[in-house]
Amino acid sequence: MRELTIEEQQKYMQAALKEAYKARAIGEVPIGAVIVHDGEIIGRGFNLREHVQDATIHAEMMAIQEANRRLKSWRLEDCQMFVTLEPCPMCAGAIINSRIPQLYFGARDPKAGAVGSLYNLLTDERFNHQVEVHERILAKESGEVLQQFFKAIRAKQKARKQAAKAQQTKDA
Image 1 (tube, rainbow, N blue to C red):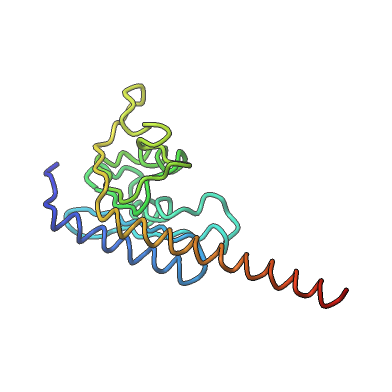
Image 2 (image 1 turned 60 degrees about the vertical axis):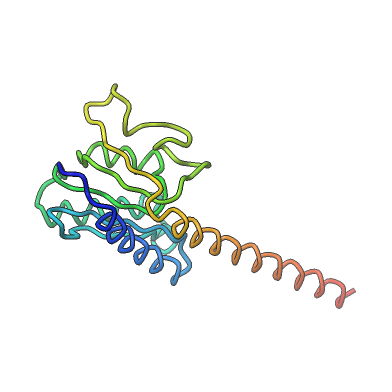
């Protein structure tokens, strides 16, 4: 499989970021993923865990499922995945199981990353398939969308606490 140019890598990561913005717009953790086959995006996904109340609805899982349907195969052997955040153990397992040969990701995930931060599942030779990993593709943009999202959540929580405290003082 040929190495993608920097321009191609950035183009597809921008598409993954667009998916992350869709998640952010509905209050989900802004993570997006796309799967590319022969220069065409055949799978897209963004987090929907809160809306669906399903722990498995991660961006990578959605993109893999769509790509499987498009190719009419569970094997994604000639594909590349682009995801804005380092995959978790579940998603790394799905990447291995679907035989994706190349993964490109943006920001590292020090709390749940299974592609170098906590574990190195994709390159572990004990599995029957290894994945070529390229990291830090548009890492700044990928990290910033997450930081802004969680900063806004913390500000809302702080405002709620202050409002509750003010209400308690008023009621006393």
